[in-house]
Structure formats: C-alpha cells, structure tokens
Amino acid sequence: MFWRQLWESYKGRLLGVVAAVFFCLIYLYFGFWNMLFCALLLFVGYTVGKHKDVGQGPLFPWKELREWLESRWRPFK
Image (cartoon, rainbow, N blue to C red):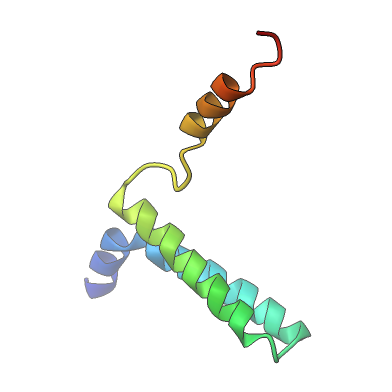
C-alpha cells in the first residue's frame, strides 16, 4: 500500500531518479572520477520528474520562444 501511494504521488520524480541512476551507473562504469557529472544527472532527473509531478507544463516554453524568434527575425519583412 505504501509503495503504491508513493508511486501515484511521485511517479515522475521516481522515474527521473531511476533513469538518472541507470545512466550514472553506465557512466561510472567507464569513469569513476567523474562523480560530479553523475550528481548533475541525478539533479536533472529529479528536477524534470518533479516538474512533471507538479504539472507545470513543459520545462522550457518552446512555443513562446519560437513565437519570439519568429517575430524578431522575420526573413521577409
């Protein structure tokens, strides 16, 4: 019951951290002294998962960025 509740509440964070740990293990297999990069992967995985759990929409506002770029650099004015 506890694990199901945990999964339902924090699904994105758990998946993000599990994916980051997986990639960290692959990375550490090829180089142990790069622990800072591993910590960065864990942080990014957790942050993206948390963002998904909260439901704030996309992490980067791609639509607004595209619209801004199109209005700023119009090839044929």
